[in-house]
Image (tube, rainbow, N blue to C red):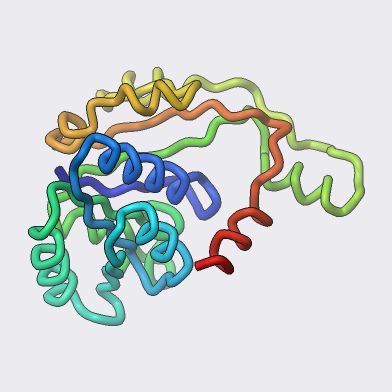
Length: 206
């Protein structure tokens, strides 16, 4: 099993879902090798903790495509499953192009993409910034959108995730065998404050 976890932009739940899937694989008695696209060194620490083995960076811009492929095949062959967490948005690469992006790495390695949408029917980071600044929340509300049905209308398999059990019920091996992308429409509480403080404390304790 191997797949790449992607999202529209940074702060969209890639690490959260990657950690949950990594923990799920280990709970089922299997080993998992995690990877992170780009030179990021924070997310790999969390991924290494949940997988029980070092997370490896896949950075075609700094290391070249040949090294990316050798690293993925070499380290990935030592575990039952492989999971690659993307960087920023799916097509965010060098400059205005997609070079070095998550999409480019997925294409190079032949990995199916699992696309994450944290659906809170609002501009969550805008509202959070207004709240932190002590201001009134203005212009953050959005109409409710069913991204799962939008994906299915375009021929892409979509899943609605409303509880942790919904995530655990996913047939991950089957998803990773698909040639087409998969979308996870994850419904979250719009009033929930991002746990940035807890994330920093977890990193400090490593």
